Image (cartoon, rainbow, N blue to C red; front, top):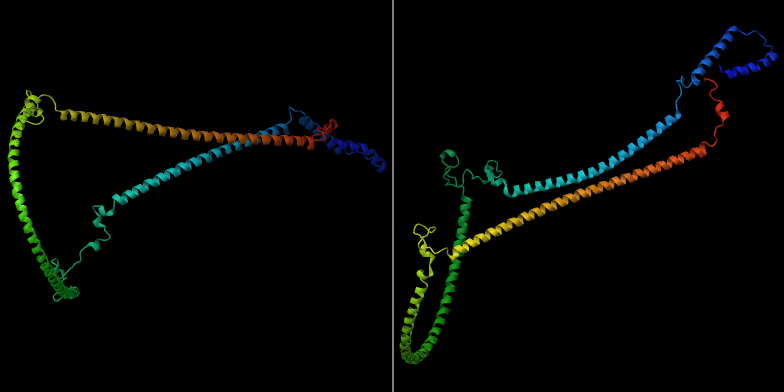
Length: 397
């Protein structure tokens, strides 16, 4: 029982005694129970009010600090997970782009392989195509082609006496041949009539032409007489001129022969050192040492041409190597730029994440500050006094 209540009871007990005549003797058992409860209360108070021996109760400040630390850890973990989610989304986008590029390359490769197979690996070009050719039966010859097929003997049961497989075709051929004969006869008759008309017309023209030619021949005969007389005169003059020209040509020929002899001596093998004289009879690649005067201009030109081709080939190889090096440099530059772009994007994402995290922390700080101000100005406006605190810890209950 609470000692305060006992004191109140003892305080009002005389009034009840005087009013209701309660001056009865006290029960010893009740007194012992009251004393026992008092001792137990004192022992409990000694255990509760002693800080060293107290085993019940909690530190609210420590718990609030732990709760705040727990919330801070949760907010930090949440921001960390959001940052990881942003990185994961970026990596997923890059992975999707790479996967799409790989799929496109694979699709292009498959399409190129399919085109190559359609163009250069057709089924008709295979060696064993005749084994699974769907048109093999269409391409195969029938068992019997005609009445005179040499493959059809008596044992084949493909030919029998009295059969005529080509009867319909034979009748059609006979009908076509009859029509053709009739057409040829009509054409032959028309052609004879046309030839006769053409022969008559040609005879008339020939007769007119002969008359005109007779007149023309008479004129030509007269002109021929005059031409013969003129030709005789011209012949006599030409004969005289020919004698003079012959003498001049003989003299010119003699002079030309003299000049040719001098030229042959000047351009001969002895004076000009002709390299062809040094060619050996054992082969064109060997020479006679006592007649060889050095390489010919063609041989020197061939050597110079080969050297020139070698220089051009070396120049081409150098240009090709230079072009390959430039291509490798360009590829390295593109790869470096791509890496720099990715790094810059990653930095921008990290910066954006840090910016969001800073904004979130600032917002939490403002909310916490506003909450503290709300507690101080709205909730905790009535601060407790010393008299209020003195009411506690008076009992163990």
